[in-house]
Length: 217
Image 1 (cartoon, one colour):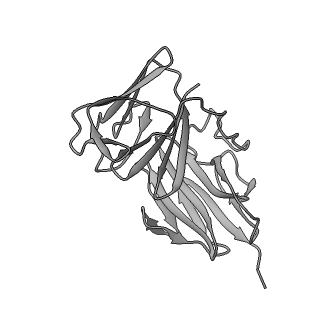
Image 2 (cartoon, one colour):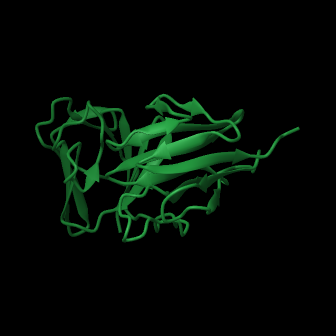
């Protein structure tokens, strides 16, 4: 089954299997794939699937849709094609592998807007410093998720999503999408990465979390 992998600045934000005849991409929340960025139109592009073929079509977007570096109006997609929408890169895989498994820290039905760690996306080449995110509020309060991957996304799609990335000098966090803001120790964090230190308090979509990291001394 075909799938797409969405990333920004090398940080994978999601993987989506293409199971529908039409998969819409854009900034508006009713799209199948919401890309919350000012350079992205409300209804930016659509992927249409017919049999084994998937076509990408630009929906008269303001800034255009690019395929492998070229602006397109409508184009048949091939395995490993790269789509650019705004600052986002979208990799198309003709025969997508199963989606990455998410740890059991999803929000409960009674608290649909609680942001909790929801997906681990890219395997780390080495362990490096040990770190974790501890949830302090909401349905998953008290639970910890070890940051054993290069990129871990947290949050609730459509509300707020952030990415924690392991780098050689430590961990950084960025706000990926959603109207709810991300704060670290009360300071708002946007697309520019913020370096995390042991004990830092994060808040995303109304859920409070704490970054924990073992000393490397």
